[in-house]
Figure 1 (tube, rainbow, N blue to C red):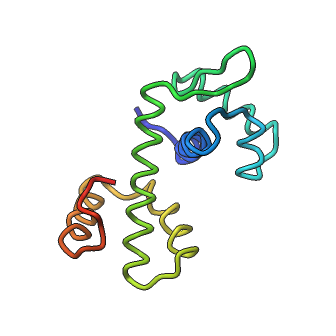
Figure 2 (figure 1 turned 90 degrees about the vertical axis):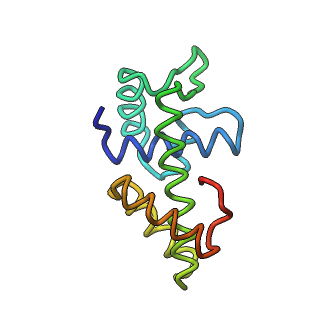
Length: 129
């Protein structure tokens, strides 16, 4: 299934907030991303309708297994690409911002080659991100 970059970003943010805070509501996403409440509300509705999240009666958002899989894939890509760019000498803030742009568009083949290169050259811990 084709998923848009913005949906991937929302899922990644939900994962990160869940790991950091335990529970996530739409307002947490608004505060984290700086988007308007209506924009986040529409996005959450779409993610729910597509089966990527569930929202309980108290407004807490949880990732479904397919949503978690996408979020984890994007987060792993982001972390590895950031580390890789830092290893090349890019400052961490720029590396993270660039990784955010790259994480969505790299093919699986290219990402796998970057991962293998990082593992061979010690810029990765030898584990899948």
